[in-house]
Image 1 (spheres, protein in one colour):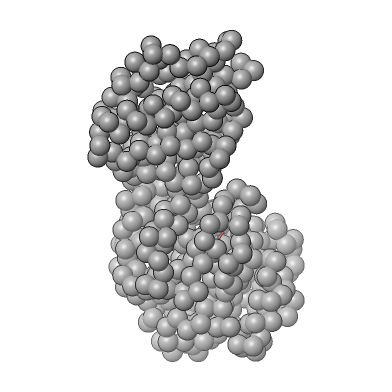
Image 2 (cartoon, rainbow, N blue to C red):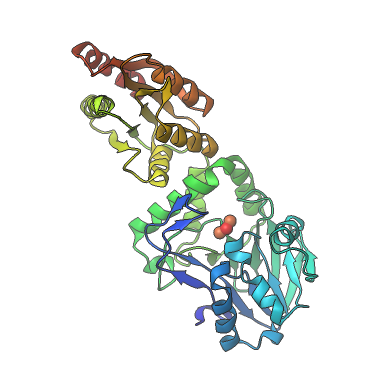
Length: 395
Ligand code: FEO
């Protein structure tokens, strides 16, 4: 069912309260999500994006209740990823000649996924416009690498709506759709989690793009992303947050992350946390066992941190696979301006701390020399090294 957004613009997407994972199993969903599609009914009728492939038939059936599909004059495909393009096959089966406006890269991604169907693509680039009647037009803005090479945003004049696609979105289900109706803590948390886990690798590109959009001097009344809450109350608040988040963001937080085999490494982790809280009571201290915590939540906490300590025991001359996976993920996310220290127990060969330090450096962390390498179980001598490690991390 359509939901009214503004004047002749409606939401026609799908709110998914049951979704638990996204990007395969790579992104955890804690509070539902949505795929937002929009219907503009001005002089011309325009569909902005669709919904994920499993919902394609319901999407088309629901859309038919709102509009005679043959009266859709154009489809805007802001991004080719299948959570937004996945209903095109079902939709285009009904209206095969309808023009699809998208970037050149989106033609590649859409044809790559659904093969050449002979669809009527109209390639657009930044600054191109589409007149939609009633004195209004759509202006296209390429958002290359935010987060795919094919991404773009579409701005609607008159109503001043920015259909931003993935940018400014959240995996967060809000039945009432709008940001002022959402739980503000959850909204901020999910927006940050989305940024940290999906957009952070492209932070430098994002900063330039925000400057470029700022120079366009567009009045923005609503930012309508393709996931989660629609920003109608002070929509520029999320743009301001993106500017901060894209600039080597950190809070006064230290996060201790580890996995363990026989609890020795756990003891070091807790001792580091305790010492950090003692040395600097203003610093937020958090501790996560990788085997028991959600990796996307951990990444969000790393994103917020000014420093981390990462621990693994030595196993088979290396580190635990859970820790190796986590540090590989952190490398992908290209965190900046964060210190790191390594710790871990060992029984025989003891390579884990050195390997952790190398991997942390390789992942862009500023690694301090201080470390805790403990044979069998932590000794008093090991614990005595912890204050210096914490001091180096918090300095
Ligand atoms: Fe929501 Fe990149 O798709």
